[in-house]
Length: 447
Image (tube, rainbow, N blue to C red; front, side, top):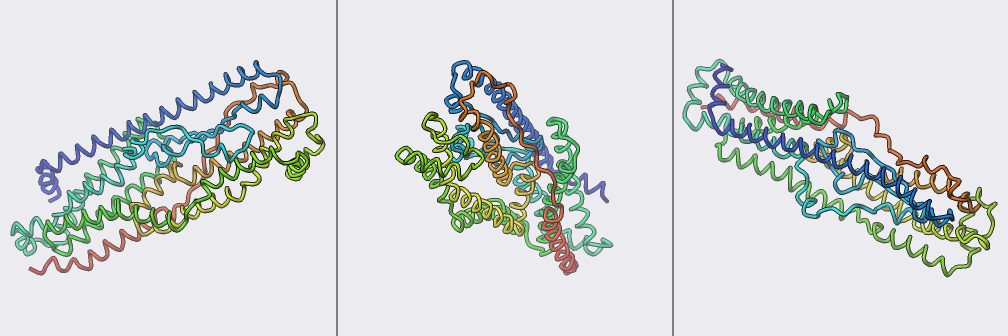
């Protein structure tokens, strides 16, 4: 029977064309991901070379450590994982490189490269997009008439009478379609592994499993709907409506709700507060500024008042700009984390959103990964400051510093993952729809 069902499935040119189209788009998405990795690697190489020449040029032209450190930048790089090519996530809008001076940090945190707004609007056709948006459409096209086709052609009554199990027959047709769709997904993953040189790790296994579970959800949904014995037109209209609701409407509604519930005015006020705090220090007595500075860094109090060293006072003003905007900075970070937390909680009931979040998490291209970079940029900036402050305050000669030790620092990848919240929502939905479908399967025999 399975051989006949396979031949029947492949006899339809539309099915074959749909599979070839999906394969073609999948291959294109893989090469788009590879191009993304190439661009990231090229940028990192340029930043590394630029820092070397930048330091050499400025050191050669300066004999004053304070003035030199005004210009020098020190990069912290979050190198994308190979899997980021499969699910680019927010890496196209949030930079993976924080190149900072030892001046005020808050003014530098959110500097980003100029990006083509048209490209950002259209997004990236990565493999994650193909899995979340296009695979469900193929499943809908393959399964909307699995039962209704025979029912509308008048052959179902004969099949129901002669077949040992009508349910088994319907399941067989679904299994054939699942075989081709799963096969296409695994073929594309194999190609992605070879083209992108993805390491065979637990993370890659989790990525594949999440994708398989997400696709299985759509099969379960279609199987459940077919048990209601509606017409083909009703089935495809219902499935497409659900697809639009889950892939477009629900994420948009959730995004608007979260943005309204947790507004982030601090994103603007933080920068204004930092700049205003710094500029006002020019009109404040030096002693007031220095007292606050030494309260923050008591270990530097030995360098005294800035009467003979302008740079002590100047960098103290810079530090005060950060100190006085720290509340806005923390508030903004907490609200962004709260947005992410609420979105994840709601996504537990929306499989498309949950799949997108999990794939981005596995590829380390989510908002959480960007905030992690910003947090580490703060620590990196503080370490760099504390290394150079004594040298600036003692008026050290830049020529005596070993500048070759200052190379871009790389943020180590995030470790660990939690399987339970990753797969449980999919498993629950799959079990619910399949169980409900089996309960309703008795209606198949009602002629």
